[in-house]
Length: 295
Image (cartoon, rainbow, N blue to C red; front, side, top):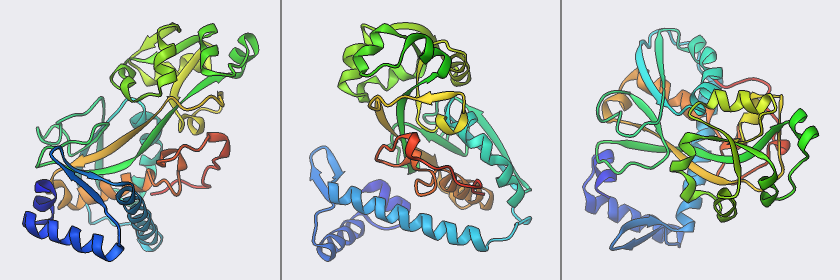
């Protein structure tokens, strides 16, 4: 409540009263209040998803009528993880620069935590929602980790039918996954100790390359299916849904270059256009790629 009031420029009682008014108008409870704080109810989460979809529609309308704006200039530093940055964001940067030619993007790869507070980055993608009162956070989407393998590997070693068949295979893992395992499915955690890890690396690009060349089965975010045509997405259940947020501070939110970069990020993770990042898992085999990338 304190962070929301500060972001909105309102008092805590005013924010609380408006929430109560909204709950009465909708006829449902949006928040559970306890000694631990305030948490969203299922109805609250559904409302947020609907609002985000409405915002995406508004953004798309703006994209369709907007012209190239050369008046916006400046440099924005974005810190992103080893996968999302090079394998997803980088492919959309050329289109961003066509519409915002005078905005420089400094894309730094690495796990982010308090970079926006320490002014080491203007925008940072994080995998745990921050609670610092000076950080504004906005949910970008959900990563769904699934298993991939090359066709040559599957031809030589067979296709695993269940997660426990993974004991017979070589597994490729990213070092950063160890920080997320408590959020992975119980079956994956149970079988983890019995799996033969062929390679563990801190490089997402190395992980994809190893998998493409038959090094084993890699656990990768589902969007990798659109990045590498050499890989086959297996039909095993997803290992984990991991939410991620974009974080920034009030000065960045008021900066024209910051607004442009933020709107661009929201567009390229728009789950209506890119279902890989929706809250609910959709297998890559059921996702059709859009004809052209968003600005």
